[in-house]
Length: 466
Ligand code: PLZ
Image 1 (cartoon, rainbow, N blue to C red):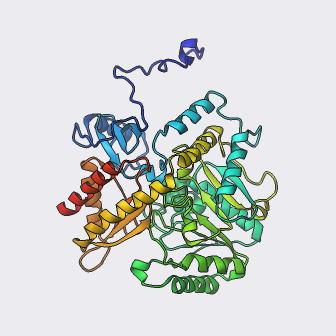
Image 2 (tube, helix red, strand yellow):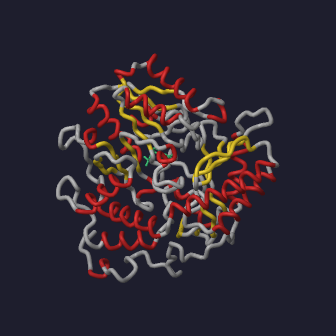
Image 3 (cartoon, helix red, strand yellow):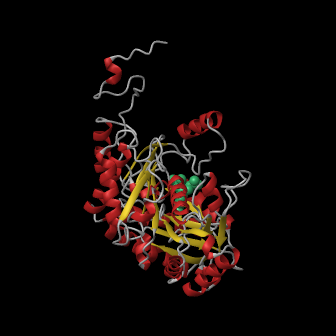
């Protein structure tokens, strides 16, 4: 086969050769009709056909929560290949916080992709990377000198944060927490607490990783100070402060069940870490970038982490992650010790700069708080008449309910049934929790009040029907 390219195949104006379809291409973003509209059953016939092709071509180890194939998304909806319009209350797992195909982000990506797509920052650098580093250094908590390094995924950011903390301290032990989630690579699997589906069969895991008890007020009834004392006792007795390089913790746990630690827990841990030369790493991969009603969830309790891991909401859907930390820590390893082919790719960094501008232009902090108020109001109304909603927790546009049986035991079956009902009714929702009994809401901040309330109305129907 000839590899000669014609001008037609390179045309900027037209549809790429070979992909012409009869229907007009669907554009994403907020111009899509903002409505829930089902024109087929879920999944529709085109999605069913694609599921069959996936079954034949894609590793069955890669699961999909909803068998619905995407054609476009934006505002608060996702349009599938069958023409169904679904309400998005998941943001692709807390990623499209700024909105899917945000016009400003899309324009920045288009401009960058037509300028240059890659050089490798380690070979011939470019200014977007540096500008983003400056912005992240300024935006993250604390007025100490900071430095940033960019990577591709949350797990990769966590891996690198641990590498740096170990190098800086000359110590090996790393402490994570019960219910914590930090990724699926070898080191981050070790840090992640839940076996299925993340770890089972994939060992052996990285050594010198330990787990301390989390503050989980709904389940342990402890104050923040009491829970911190318990965690610190575990670390001191089972590892030793002088062997501990870092503790890594999500200020609000994501996959583990949207667990918000009792007030005072995080500050007490930070004080202990500071006093013992232990690097305090806040994993804000899920909580970062406006979602919780602050730029970073650490700010709700005035925490100033030594290092932070960031990803997801950073770049409007483009793959990008960052480690931001105290300059003396970030500069500890030798030059060339950190890197990777694609880390801080120019398209992703352009998207990130535009995403930060969109957050600002859209007054997204206010929007996250408003969405949080609506979520709390509706969920509290549901809880008043439904004892199965054991707990409502979260902050801003990161809110969840924990579903329990009459005896107070985790009810994963009910949680799964409620989610399934929502999916079939055209609402994208996610579950989480070590026990699979937490129903979480992560709407894009670009969703309208009306659509959000309609989606929550479907949740109410789902609870009533189960
Ligand atoms: N740290 C706090 O939430 C990713 C995982 C989805 P990556 N959470 C979604 C799944 O089932 O794989 C996450 C996180 C926190 C790290 C990560 C890892 O980020 O970009 O998925 O590697």
